[in-house]
Length: 125
Image 1: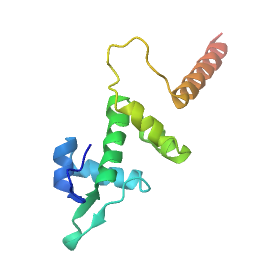
Image 2 (image 1 turned 30 degrees about the horizontal axis):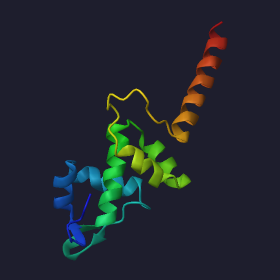
Image 3 (image 1 turned 30 degrees about the vertical axis):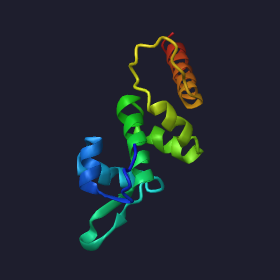
């Protein structure tokens, strides 16, 4: 997302661009304090830098398009793999392509689920 020469973007503009409610942005600020840091102006109005809006857009895509949880996105931010995931997140989840790239984090999650399913199966047997 290009910031069109705007250095600080007010929250109402970010809400329009990303089509999310303002309370969702404020919630994400609390959940991802390292990634989303608005600058507050007079009257505690929130203003976002262009790069912060791009991070918010990537977070939104990971949550909504990829179906990740907040904990999963926090893990990505903590591991430092956010930039790689951000590039993957820009591709919609249902593109109709049969060859879908699965990130290492997703493979780890899949392996964990398989392990849990095998444990549940052995418990039921």
